[in-house]
Length: 218
Ligand SMILES: [Zn+2]
Image 1 (tube, rainbow, N blue to C red):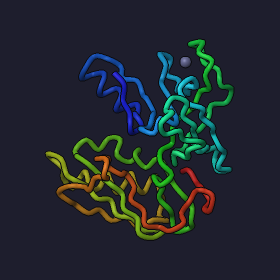
Image 2 (image 1 turned 180 degrees about the vertical axis):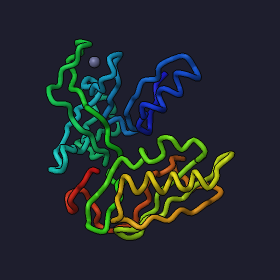
Image 3 (image 1 turned 60 degrees about the horizontal axis):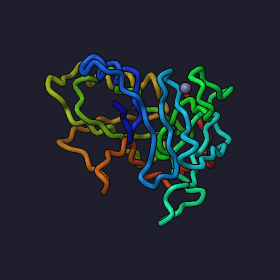
Image 4 (image 1 turned 90 degrees about the vertical axis):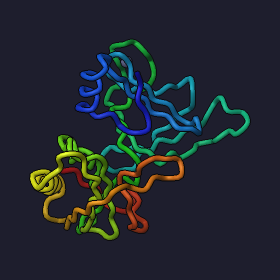
């Protein structure tokens, strides 16, 4: 069983294994075929270098690299150095005990726009950790219109109550400190993109590219 389109977090992998009795493995790819990364039996994320020529361009921030790829198999629509807008962290010393020679990625850090911006201008990523134990939330999305303020849109699941709302505020404060005003808004559904994906962070902040703002990880 392989998963794609979103990062597979350890607690999610454990829940899938409990339910189905198989350990899911993570796969990263895109319809454009410009990059492919597959998890091996040792848990390492290997770049499938026979599938596409993938480059990792340093952003200069926190060891993050842009994933840029050139497809080798699509002769009808060749893409040269296609910027996927996804970010990855490379592993120090790229070998893996499984013996595969391909480059190892420590993790895929999500889309460039999956970052929120504090009042100070610092960017915070990996916000999905806030929802780790929030089992009574059906779906959630972060909307940010300006640095230092954000709204979490929540579709409540069965049994969601005041305790859950307090826990959500607590987890957010833990990750962002008090440099961000956080509102929670309850909605019946969340908008999907044209391809049916749910964007985790919807940001209206202009020019908030990773090169232009300092990055901080709490
Ligand atoms: Zn391996």
